[in-house]
Image 1 (cartoon, rainbow, N blue to C red):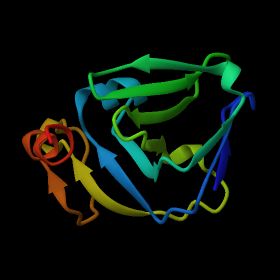
Image 2 (image 1 turned 60 degrees about the horizontal axis):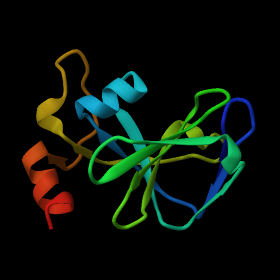
Image 3 (image 1 turned 45 degrees about the horizontal axis):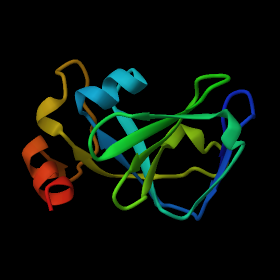
Image 4 (image 1 turned 120 degrees about the horizontal axis):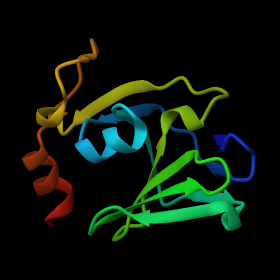
Length: 133
């Protein structure tokens, strides 16, 4: 899969993925303007145009990257594992994803719902499973 930012300064390539996961945490909603629809790409990501990438440390365990020229959100990266999650909309061509799961479901505001039947994890379950190990 391949995507680029709005201005074309940054291009990202990764191997094909089939699913998109949804994060309802307040930080992702603030960053993206709604829930983050993320494609987990692992560490196998090739980024070109690094001179246009700005990285923001958003927590003790993760950082977020964006294009410094056009502001496109590029990735969420786990510091410890080096694994990337990319916004699903970044990949336009051939992006036929299925919704896999929803996390921070207890942080989801009441003004939207998804009809998809997916596994759902609360904030506590996410922290226990992925962060506090």
